[in-house]
Length: 114
Length: 115
Image: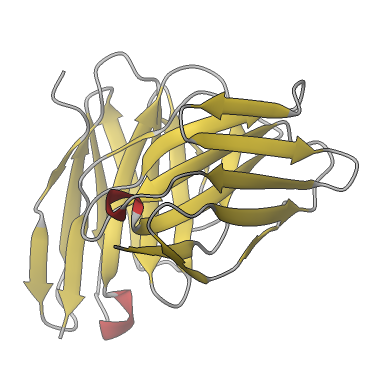
């Protein structure tokens, strides 16, 4: 298995632009998570899905952030409009079944908003 | 909700020494405690985990202990090697109303092992 796949690996954009991050979870995994990692705030859970349905989006910082999972093999995290404080590494992770199972992380997308 | 505190934030040891990282959690309902290792520029990866029905678990040079009464758990690395240098994150699961134990991560410990 190729593991969790994320694209792009690096994104540099200007303030005000729309940014879309993409994730393909491991086949057969029914949970998908979006995390944001910064030096100041550490590793934060933004939102997670179960069987393509958003379960908890309480970590989404504001309305500029949105996430979708149209099918079991694809999810997007969109930021519109982007701001410099959104600069971070965004990780997607997936797991199988109920809690207590390993979350497998993707390689991350390093986002820089100028 | 759950809150996880991790100490120390940085740890420097000599190769061959032991390293101990400690975490405390607030939610007594938490029952799953994984540890992730993140090398520089890489993704977090699970190295060991423990469930609340055991007090200790070992895997070669790595061990984790859990004290449910005190609500703390620790990672122990023996005979450290330079390749152990990384950021280590503890986490705890807090039962969500939907039935899934989402992970709450500690702030991380940057471990440096000097040859």
